[in-house]
Image (tube, rainbow, N blue to C red; front, side, top):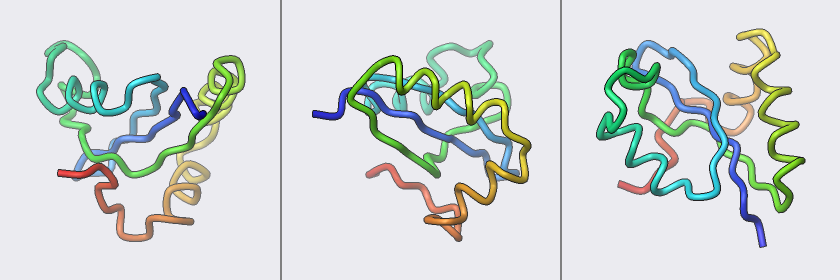
Length: 93
């Protein structure tokens, strides 16, 4: 069972946010409703789910999140566009 999700959110202007959660549906709701109004995602309206990876182990997920956050923007964009060329929102409505 895959318990942890690494995700990338994007704004219309393609501002990126990388996060990790064990409950993607709840976390997306928090981002989209701006539950934390002072957060980066709320301030920059970063709400579209454009990339996901699933992990069984917490330590693997944390390591991958740190790895992705250390990448240059161009490499993150290539990762997203490998499977989501149009930058479509991957979350169900």
